[in-house]
Image (spheres, rainbow, N blue to C red):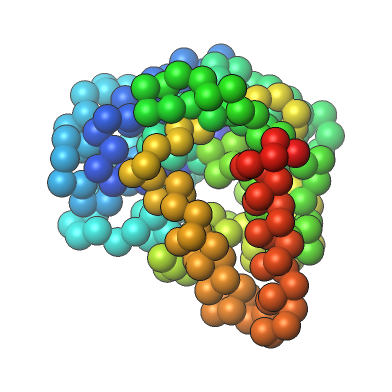
Length: 251
């Protein structure tokens, strides 16, 4: 793996309305030693055409012949990443220009191998919704079971210390399917206060459907993490409580 290279992973499915902004936010980074691995998951709109408008050689594009889901798209990218660091940006999110530089400096200064940041919400048109989701100071396996407050597009991990394994295919919560096993190994994720990502809230986003997200997490507890029923209820109750605080009470 290349020592200071950041491999950025983006799965994309029918993201023609937003993916240009996501890619441009990577191109605009003050830290420029990166590669962007975009996996088009058999989009039926103009996503693939938009991706290929960008001629930067650091952008590497892969295309599935059939729709496989975000977890499998991640796995495709994992096979080709070359950087020591792996970061994620969803096709409808936007990074701040100094996201990589700030976060890498934070990681190196503190010898952290797994970090994430605060983020805010924007609407379909990219306008601020005046809502900030603050990053918890730390997340362990135990705390993450209770509170999955970690924006996917804010995460950076150091592959020198963390082995990125293929993600099991799940209908929802594929980011949890990646992070839970890593945290379970004993790694601690560290949160950075700065807002480094704009999360797009829209009615068409899978993650905006909280009922499906909750069902996906329950199934992940049961089928991937093999948590028995009563502890599963305990962790799920905490997840619901923390989600309500985060999304509705601004706590």
